[in-house]
Image (cartoon, rainbow, N blue to C red; front, top):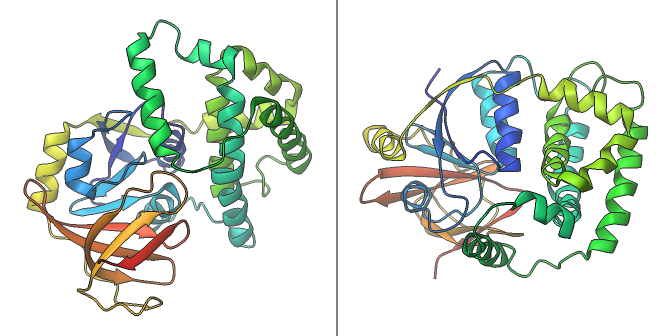
Length: 307
């Protein structure tokens, strides 16, 4: 198997989702720690400006968004599967809900004053301000949920998840699916909130389930310098284009822009390299990384012709 390189930082919840998937698959991977706020010059060299964490690299192919990253890991290591027969589609739908609605309820719940104080205990004020300023840009125009609304909504979601899980080992039965990893990272983030995490103690089935997911661990990994990751991209050749399933009136080689549609909406420009029903890819040239191809999922991203 080609070297999997994960660009992440330890406290990123979406990175924890991918780290656990790598552990579930029993994979060995290379770990590149990146800044938790912009600027991220070495990440930008590979992606062209993608703002979210994590990013996965295989040679000169760069994968954005954990939904796509999970699919690519599944292609490289199909067993054990993230998409069990009979529940694959449903698990994807539940995962998408968790990565969006549940996550953006967990964040304001965890970051109310008591949680925020716990997370940033001992951190210099200027570092806290820089983090807050970065996240304000990252969130773009997303409406902010007030603490009282987050408290009520998060408690209700936990009740429904507890009932859904019931006596099952995982959310779709005896085997885990992508949904388990997407739900888990939201609750993992809440645990960072110290005092506010006490809410989880009222849900014993979820408590036991969380331990089962955590037990997958992170696989085995080695540290890699970001400069070395850029050199790997420069020395590699991108995977062959998947062709073009056109839904935008675009042809291979057209100048295009890709951007997330919710948060971290910074545009990434390049030429259309390929498009399928589920993903699209753009090629770009970088002075340090050389020719790379950046891949995005269809869901949650827009593709448009560059002006």
